[in-house]
Length: 134
Image (cartoon, rainbow, N blue to C red; front, side, top):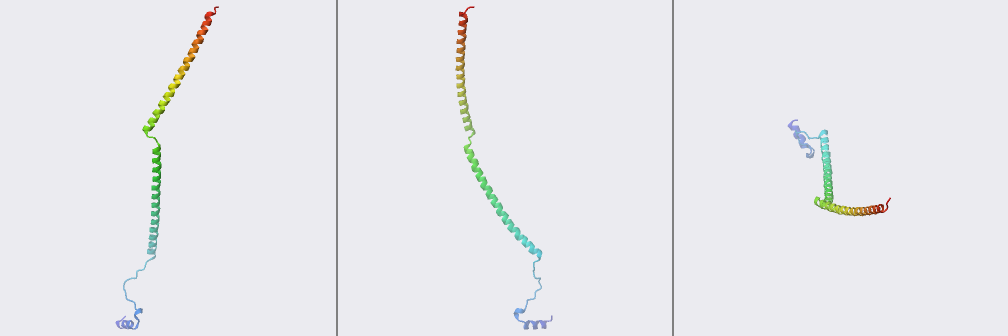
């Protein structure tokens, strides 16, 4: 376009109708770029949701660990230590020994009683045999 025509067009057209002349390409987004941006947005939202889920799982894990440690500590308080168990066993053993010696002494007394009766019966039978002659 020649300079005279251009000057005429610019002076006769209203200012609002004129467009600046530019040699740069208008930046338009391609379908591929739009899809990439959409996937990126979805990926970020999914990541946030997964991070919240992981955080919830960690909180649940800590809660379970606390409950388990409370139960274990309670069980440890109720469970006797080795020394306590050893002392209790010594007590039971001495109690059993006492009962065994009691039963043994009763058995000896009963055996002596039976032995005495047997000797008495034998002596009586011997006297009867000696007094009776054939």
